[in-house]
Length: 407
Image (cartoon, rainbow, N blue to C red):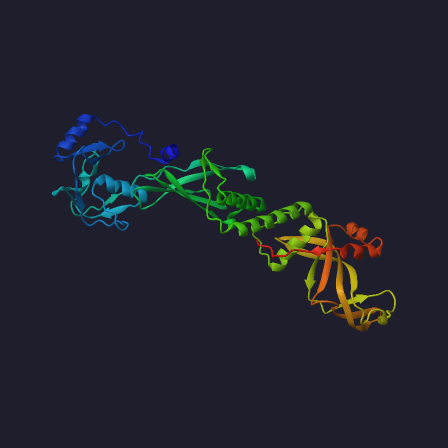
């Protein structure tokens, strides 16, 4: 299933030149039995064991990081390990012991067409691995989410002789890593969201959808590889975040404003997103429990306070215009508001035709506030035509939500 996968990321050996065999034979005679030189690039050759030979070698004064339990027993294994880990190791030793015979370290890899340019005991040697291939495109398709995207994947260092690590290198908001087991041909996936790197709300939504697709095992890579089911412990929170950002996007389109998702927003701001979505997108009023102990109002003529005191189940409606800042955008919102389930305990005259009402819940523990928001004053005025219509609409409002939103 993954036969072409490893091939796509292996080292390209097609450019290794055909150094004349006569040159290789002459060089190999100097090595002794069991060893020979083979070409590795346009100018260099390396020492390898002849077929059927058992070779052991020792380097002095070399520092290399090896995982527990791993032993290297040949130059090729050392070269392979350095390639897999992309380690550059240095030694100031002057020789290597191969099957008990000491040879100059410069003989491991040499340039037969250039004179020797090192001084015994004074030259430091570096063993430098060939770099990993350049990033390669990887098609990622999530049919259920309607997403097709091309990522770029590059091999990464991994201290394992049987596994290869790959990771997306696009510096985007979704990072995909996977380990290819060369013995079993299997892939192990890990996906990480970095929403701080998303350029806009649309990218956040796309990233969260792809993440959900990976969790549910519904992503196809390269047109052929179907991803497995992953740990779904985060599924609920990711779905909640997706729904929240979809609401933010819908509001931005309705208001024709550009929200910056990287602007700070507090819990009250998130609550206001829910309020605007209910009013502007769903076109319905909502209600929430509030802790209101008093309010002040102005009347056109003196108020008969006896009409309000100690009466249960009263409601008060009013209109307001407010300026709200969300995700870096300043919005002008027109609102119809009603305080429900009120009992007036005291009315204080503040000044002529201006009164302060002290209130408490008529029933239960809370006063409820019902509201509906609009983007134009005309829409607000229409709701108050006639005036009693606003309270009629607001009194039918349902609870805003049961759980707090999550961004």
